[in-house]
Length: 226
Length: 225
Image 1 (cartoon, each protein chain N blue to C red):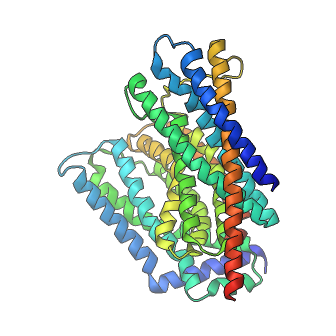
Image 2 (cartoon, helix red, strand yellow):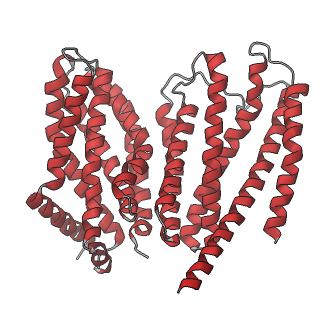
Image 3 (tube, rainbow over the protein chains, first blue to last red):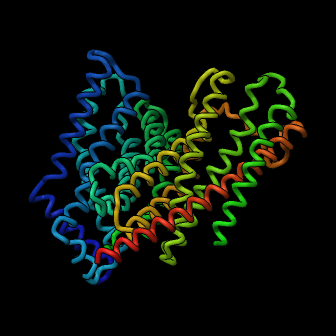
């Protein structure tokens, strides 16, 4: 089997499990919507938020809820000793990494299909709706978050305190990505021209490239059970 | 034995150098024109930042070497430098805040250097938390090596992403010139030397302590089995 086919196979397997159990996706969307509602109340009932605050609120909800799905990606494999089975199968660690990152990327995209509309319903009165600016920001963050997160979640799943360690280890690393995403989203929500959004998208893409490469190279060390 | 000797030598040397450096800061270096005596914290702030950064660099290199060689000594070096780095970064942030409050009229600002130091502190402190959560030696070493490498990779991106913030942090040492009077510069260099020697002593001590701990653990495992 070519490596593309193997990645596709693993991706299909995980998505099929998700489709039947629906545990990650439902909890991600539910928790994210819950955060949005809480932040809406916290920012003052009946008040309009500015683009800057709105961007921050959207990313807090997305990132906090995505950690839930990410934690399950490896915890599920560890529970039944499936990691060992994956490792002895004729699939390289790099392909496992790519498949797991893609699973998480897909889950994040799907949960954002719920969260972004909820965000606009709750906060959107004064904000501009700019799907063309927003879409590349969302996709780049999903990519950066998934590639960094897959590496870190392999590490945290190897310890006894998976749920606690995952956000502690991951959030500091993706902080630059979050900062850039908030800046870009602020510009998008304030209906600024795309050129201003693009200024932030370039370093975000750099982040994705660097961490995808680092993750691909370091993942074999993180996943091996010795 | 050699490592022990060297660490005693370094710490003995540091015990002389640090009081000498403090003496120079207060009795030799002139008073800064606008900031007055508050500026004297600078002579320790910059060396602390330098050694903190050095620690994380050493941690990253040790991480790479551990993953390549799988030798305990590299894990010991990583553990020592991460621990020292976290302590030094804490001191950098504290001295910076103490300096910034009277001069900038704020404890904190989102300047690239401040942001980078803070995020580095978070990343390497989380590495310490990770180390405390794992008992198996090999796994702990591998995981913390991976995190130290990824953490160090984050530095340029953090700096880049914070670059767009308005900066009020001074740049003392530039590529073309040093914005300091010669007696101030001399004091700064002595402080840096003192701090580097202190760092080396601390590092040597921590590495040898870590190796001894690991040996004791080995003996315990041998004794029970």
